[in-house]
Image 1 (cartoon, rainbow, N blue to C red):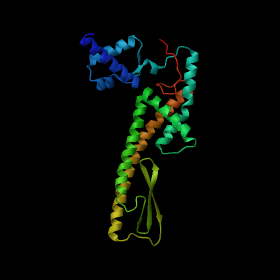
Image 2 (cartoon, helix red, strand yellow):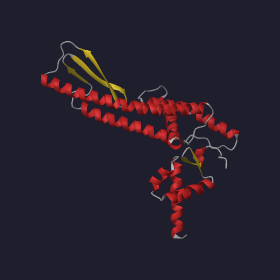
Image 3 (cartoon, rainbow, N blue to C red):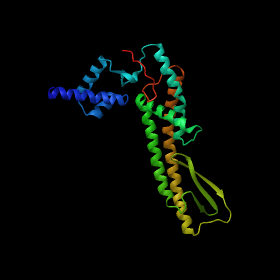
Length: 250
């Protein structure tokens, strides 16, 4: 094989491997490969003619992710599998809120499969999930830095009031105030220090809460749309480790 032919083969394999990871736009493939636009478009069109990939709503799908079924039986099998993962999507939304569930082990497995379908079949929704998790982590790290300034990382006493900081959901802390007669800060300086820290924490909480709620709203809207489509007869896009073996229509 000539060097040029070998390079062409490597480029084709690279693009196919990228699409096996999940649907991508042409721009995303260009960014991931660094190949010229002409090269990427030519290879995509070749794959499309060979029915290895398919373009839907601006995204290129590897044939296994486009879910064209050979017959009604294959469709019913995949639809049953998809509907069985609906609790996994619901569990996924609860998990990002930090809500613990009964039968957690079973739900975690369904949640894992649901997330695999998001990654391989709904990349934009999966991106929102990753964005929320990253924002949650950043919020926690920021607030913990401020809490470390306090003598106790959960409770402190200020001018006759008990100030409690407790998780509202991952990354967001609720502050509650309860009057406790006779309990004060040890010194005025200590009280002023605590007050300053608490005001800063309150500002951060407000900002991070707004950010996280906005991302969560977009994510939950998208996930519930997927659930609704599945309930009404649209098998899930993408694939997971529990997917049944089905034939794709050529």
